Length: 97
Image (cartoon, rainbow, N blue to C red; front, side, top):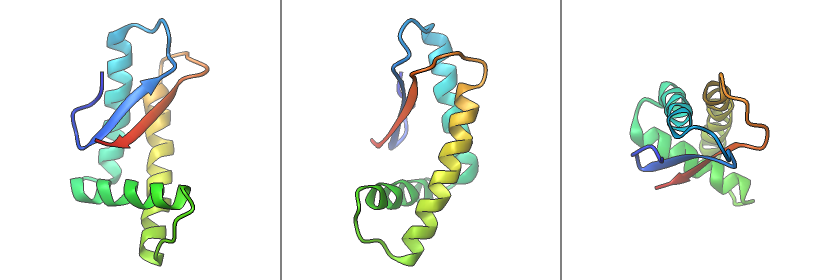
């Protein structure tokens, strides 16, 4: 299941996990991201800045701040998403929807 937002969040490489558990993990992840970026446009801008930086693109100082904020939010969201599930190879795939 992917969370229905302009940002698609999907727990990957979690073979054999109960679909309801996977859905709850994705929802916890999304909830934590939304805490950091309550405004939808801010979420989109931060993810876009992070993606540009990760791909080696030139970014402004303001975009760098957004990219760093996204990285911090992603780490907290990842921790929240994995809470209570034991999947070693799993990861959260986050993309512009």
